[in-house]
Length: 403
Image (cartoon, rainbow, N blue to C red; front, side, top):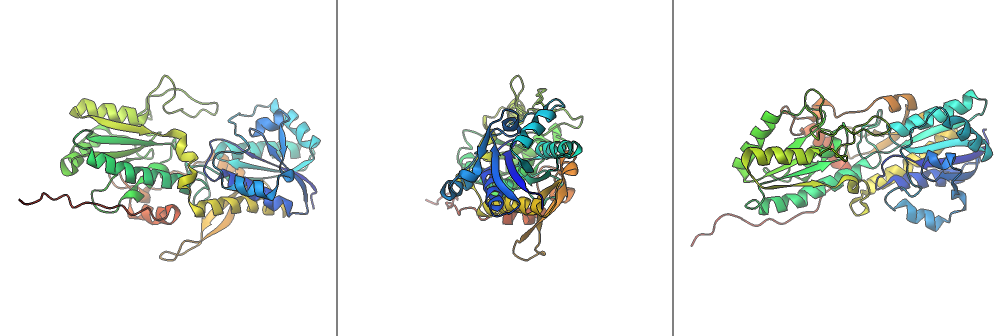
């Protein structure tokens, strides 16, 4: 048995349920004989570098219970990209605090951090185990059915379109169209989730643009015109990372972050929603709206999904259990265990950190409609049990009254 202390951190963008995973790690570590104390990184790996660790073992059960259902990242986050010169200091700090178990909650870049830190420690004669806990509203991590945080963000999008769609419908004589932009970089899972808002034919959204399909301006404007003619207004949802065939972002932003990712809507650039709004206005002379909520969908507790909180917590617990059994270099995954037609059920597996760090999981072709601007029934079967039922809304009979 490898005896020592554990450390946990949260990195990248937050989710409504990321703290549930952190508390899952702490709760499981407290019950594991191999782990003596649990420390938390303040602002992710920067907390290790800056000697700013929190003693999570000293927190009361009441505090942890409250934090479990609190949105955003309670430990604080960071997007620091590790350089070679960082590793000797990180190892000194880990030795100083007797860290033998290394856990982080995050996405691709976070899994890369775990992989590199643990590999460096072991190569330098310091035995340590590292297990990742998946997290991203983008839902694009390799090897997992879905990521904790995605169901709640997907519900946020669906509810926004359900309720905003009514506004769009009733204000069609003022604003003929609306464009709602989601986060998600190169993955279309979140914009696709807007389809959950539909209850009958003609309900918003009418057009869904996903980064997995190249944007075709001519085809898009034709569908806008056809939809407006049919319904009197147009509801559009787009992913922030929608690009043209040559890879140029519709947002036209050239700014990149430290990991080389395009910062859609960054200073000096535009946004996909703004660009689409401009196209439609220029072509048809219509007035319309665009909505860009950015990180709000990552931290909306009021729209959180109970299933999401439970799975996030269980992923944190499972990470500790795996490490205590000798596993290392893996990320906890969620696997759908039910057969078609049966109620949703999940189990927990693993994926190698190296693969998670280097591969993304786009939406498969079977989930995207033939014209590339909608989703299929197969996607609805996938997403419905994750988002849950939306509230029922009343509808008036809008047929003209007879005198």
